[in-house]
Image (cartoon, rainbow, N blue to C red; front, side, top):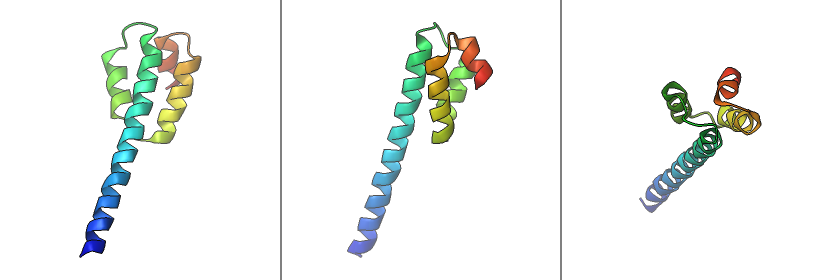
Length: 76
């Protein structure tokens, strides 16, 4: 019984870490874009709803290189 509880606890911790990494990546993207002004609601929602870390990584690089929100949106 303890093995099952340990496995469940471990899986919960791993899921929590994954969610934490997603939240951090999303926050990083939004922080970069906020330097350009208000982020359009549709873009904000799309970023906040994304769960693919690879895509978020690409968006993060794109946000770092963009010169405007419009440029970022065109490369999403």
